[in-house]
Image (cartoon, rainbow, N blue to C red):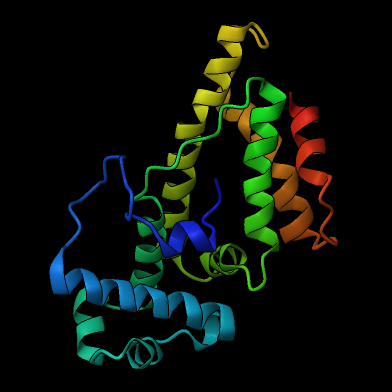
Length: 202
């Protein structure tokens, strides 16, 4: 659900979902992978203020003009990292009931927000500094919530929730407490939080 280290680091490797644009192959794909890996590493180790095109180029082992030509600036780099995270075949788990499905979603969000270092938290923070990153993060969330509508559709078929239930509102109600507690309030991680928030929403 969240743009985790695993999802971002391996996006596109087993994709079954359609992508907005055809991604390059061959040497170009390898260069892109190295550069995006460098963006993630630089961001989590040094923060947004030290995320520069020159630092990324040096870390990726490519010429700075290659980065400028393809990504233009830091905003373009961050946007591509987030767009790449959506190029996967991820789908929400089917546990057999609504509370279980929402808990499974929340456990993924929780893992992404509590890993150290957290790529997800670093990207969220960067989105407040870069308009391009903010737009890309919004696209990522829109895509993930759209995929997660299956959770609510299954619940309707099982008779757990009424037909016409606002899927997006229910999903946000389930996941938002994790972002509020762990990102905004920075409360200590509590492994009971994913299930507690999921049951409250259900």
